[in-house]
Length: 365
Image 1 (tube, helix red, strand yellow):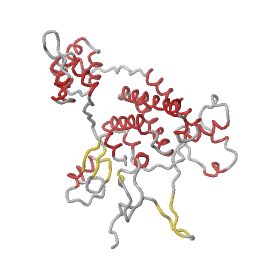
Image 2: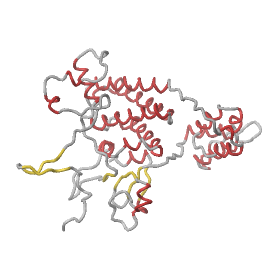
Image 3: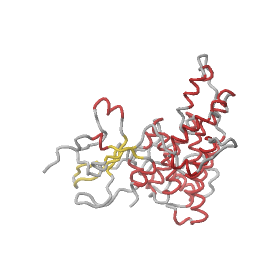
Image 4: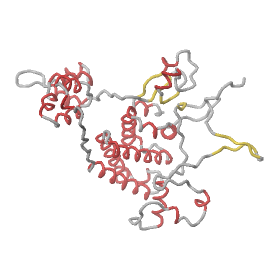
């Protein structure tokens, strides 16, 4: 029976009819980060490649390392920008193979997701988990795409000053992973030439230096500031925070905020938000007057148990058709679009938010 719509099981390639038959169309028009020019395939095939080198390469002494540096920083691999992908776990009559973590990283549109403040923390946390545990499992194209998106994440933090602490932790975990892979495990586990990884390590060190020297400018405004708000409103805003380090850093701003940040009821609410009552009973921290020290209690529980994750927007997984997607809230409200070609009677009831750890667990076979 013919399909009346787009077949969701198709690989998504574009085909053109020629005299010799049907041929797939591959697009190479991705721009370079340094000089924004397209890749010329005739230049790639020619012997004279000196005009392809970009950036200041004075520190790269050999021609071999120049070529590796170029291959690492160009966008010669075509990357999809899909809003959804089908997560197939095994072979069927219609489709053979299975979806890998690297394929999901290449096909899902993470480059646009980091521009959305609701999704930025989610993508940064996902990249941090990949840097810790799954970097070796990525293919060469996926690793290249990983570092290209990571560069955009760092650039956004430097421009918008948004959540630099999270990106610092991401770069720290990534540098430790690369150090363990190159020193303790061995260079044979890395995909590609060692000079490419040396260039990536240099970029990580450069990004860390830029983030450590980041100075958030003080905005001059003639209107009302945070300190002009009544104390009960400042206290109400502090109760909306779910990150303890944000509360501590805000308490360093003024003496009034320091007093509000040391409120025991604030830390009690934070403990109940992240941990369960059973975990409290195992790790009670009492003061000299037999009262619970909720602030110390929080950091004690943090060492033993994972904290509750909270994100503005996440990837969603459709349990009916096994599709992983970014859900566009505007289209969902205006056109009642679930974001993918779902055949269920109630598509919204089949959608399940996916945490970063759950995203990685989907591709463990």
